[in-house]
Length: 401
Image: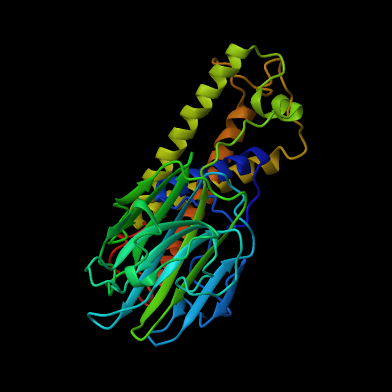
């Protein structure tokens, strides 16, 4: 970052403009729950989660089972779900022999965790909800691979012989061939106001197709999130690339702090409510103008940016010369607070100089921020595509910049 001095107000604007730049680049970071994991994974660990059985952690995905017979693996959250309403997205692959695979895996929301059993690697007497990705057609009805939902109070046992036909929530199933895809498959489980909705995205492009929905579903008072898998005589690799948990709970409005009200919401303690509303409208307009300016600046050609940079540097040198002359002179403030020398419009020269200098410093900082963000985002995109040497990014993402 360029080593330069700026006013506190200038740095505040730099922060606001940097946030606006993030929005423009489409790189805003969502407030993900701690019940979340995504690559890259380091040191063969997943923070906040327990790894069990045959599970292996690679840099880019978590393999619950390999395509070998008789394996079972699991990953369970250490913490319970703290939300009433939520949404969970996973990216996964089930790969193996061309025609036959097994047995499948489950995404669980259950009272107990870390207990292996015969229900796709989870205990048989679970209490809670299971989203089952069943790849093996046990009953010969050609309705696999499938996604279905099972709910149990501890007394329901999944019957593998008929693919759990009597245990599945009525209507909560769909047949979809998600085995051996080129890219990870996305599945989304949404629970809100007692309604469960499961959707899938076959190409991970944000185009969701509803698989099923079920109403009047009552979840246990508290529960963990887990992923388990099991292989029989036929076997698949069951790979999980990410799991994202988002809260859908309505956030209560926080009571405003009195000090915050006095300093942040008011431009002056004596302003009326109407005057404050007008100020906030101006703030919104100015922020949009800053955002537009950032977009234009980032889109400049390197030659134009170089010319603008040199012009700003020359202006900074001129300002430094002027400040050296007046270093010992304290500014004399008029009644309007604009500085000692005023023009016909009432704006003082010191005020003009401060505004001009501050905006120049901000623009220089934003250019540096944009440059660093461009390199960082490009590198991150290349890494997630699995090709660190390809800084332009691979197919599918469309580019972040």
